[in-house]
Length: 149
Length: 67
View 1 (tube, rainbow over the protein chains, first blue to last red):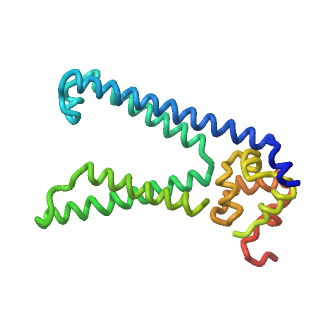
View 2: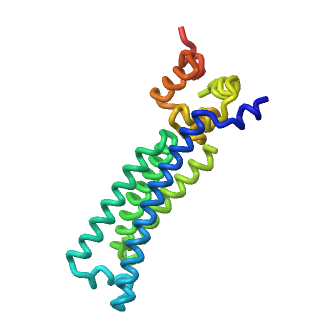
View 3: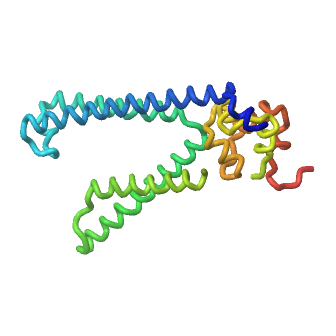
């Protein structure tokens, strides 16, 4: 009996499907925008025969600043859309991830810096710390997701 | 926190997605609340109470003694 009732899509499921569509549409649009920026900079790099790390310095400053500003604007817009689309459980999972990221950063950088001053290791690597912080946050987020399902 | 959400939902023949849609949250959120892995905010608890036309304390039980 329950199976028959559950096979009929109710108003709630229709609303949920609509929310999901809007959410994935905004993610898709942002993904496409990111891909366009990535392909454009990649094209410029290939065309001007510069190393990937030197793309930005090879561009005219106004163009570089414009691309960075647009990317930043899209990122902020994406975050805002994401925040508006998620529910409180997703928000809590994100806050756990953000907190873990912060702790990784706030611990790793001073430790590395102090070890560098003690001549044990080289200078702190910005990108390594950035990706470690992202990774820490990602692990906390995935753990929350896995635990909650 | 213990709750009677699964029972109330089953009485109406709603899936988790159906209840989630009516509440404006995901199916995963309904599951997390039902299994006690997430304590809903006051806002969501009131929304649940209104949807099931029951007082909040009849849906959720924090294990404490109420006088």
